[in-house]
View 1: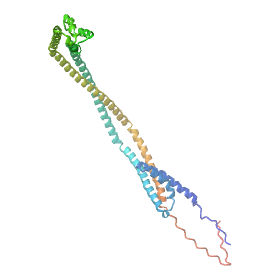
View 2: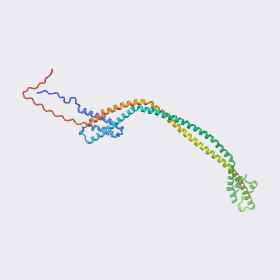
View 3: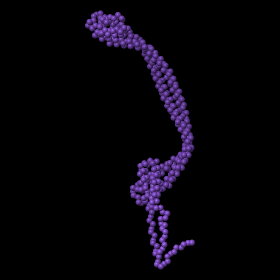
View 4: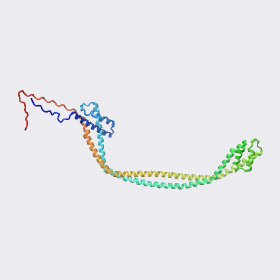
Length: 370
């Protein structure tokens, strides 16, 4: 009988379990890469759906996939393209920063000059507004004195007339509230005493004493002499009232002049006050503008100083971005393409059976080299 050969058919070929683990590892790498698509506004919910679905679709041979798997992989391909686009954008941004260093330097230097000029202008404007406020405050202070003087003149000049107006009003009230009712219906001693008190400076003393006779009696009981007393009483009251009205009429022009002076001074004061308040508001705005301009100038100078470090950082980011893009293309993208296009291996044809040795023929002896 011929000796058996040692079987070497499976030597060096991975087992099915090892191959499955490799496919799962590739699917996981692809799922992680899909997350980059969020930077291109791919919804996180879509990515969360596609990631876990890959392991149920990609390991299946291309010709064995059903339509749902094909649709999932089509979406995954588009999402993976979005991830690659995000990485390309990061590379482009870093390249633009590095390549535009000279332009950015000129831009920032120009910003320093511009903000410095704006700050200087704001400082000058602040000084102008501050001087304006001081001038308006002084003008308000100056205009206040004429107003106070006009008000004082009005108060002292109108004092006699105002007092006379009060006296006249009190007399009219006395006539309406005491004399007229007592004349029409008669009065009491209490009313008479009050009336006498109010008329002390208006009517002669003898008449004050005599008015008791008619005013304490009912009208129907009064005689001719009583009527004369009441008539004289009313005549003196009217004369007093007329005298007061004449005096007030005489004082009217001077009072009007004093009132006009107060009105003019008050208007001037109000105008000066409004101008002062406007100047104060403008000063506040100028102060705030100066502070903002100062901050802008400081920011521009700081940006100019940090440009070199930013360029170095951008160069480092560019290297990292290029490396990440290369790793994406050689890793998840290549894995996806490999598994996406993988088909089942072709079946190897069976080898023809070796012819049986003829009976009695000597078996072939293998030659062993020394």
